[in-house]
Length: 73
Image 1: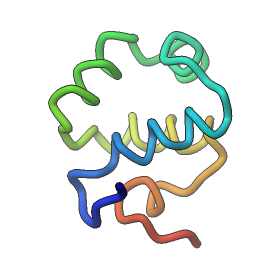
Image 2 (image 1 turned 30 degrees about the vertical axis):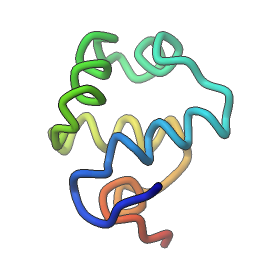
Image 3 (image 1 turned 180 degrees about the vertical axis):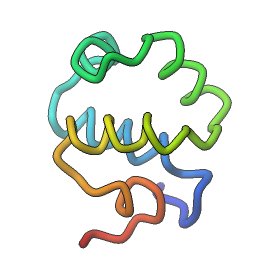
Image 4 (image 1 turned 60 degrees about the vertical axis):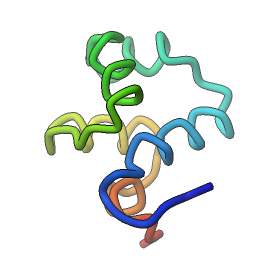
């Protein structure tokens, strides 16, 4: 299910959210990112800005590298 490359950032976010039992609304609230921004990113599979990627990675307690490239550091 996991694809390598930038296009899978949101796939890995969704997988981490599932594993940690986190809803989009909760992620949005705690990262101060609009819920619609997260939903659009998932639907469009777009690459987020560095700021958004860092905030999501910190909240999910994973590295930006993992979310972006699938590599755990």
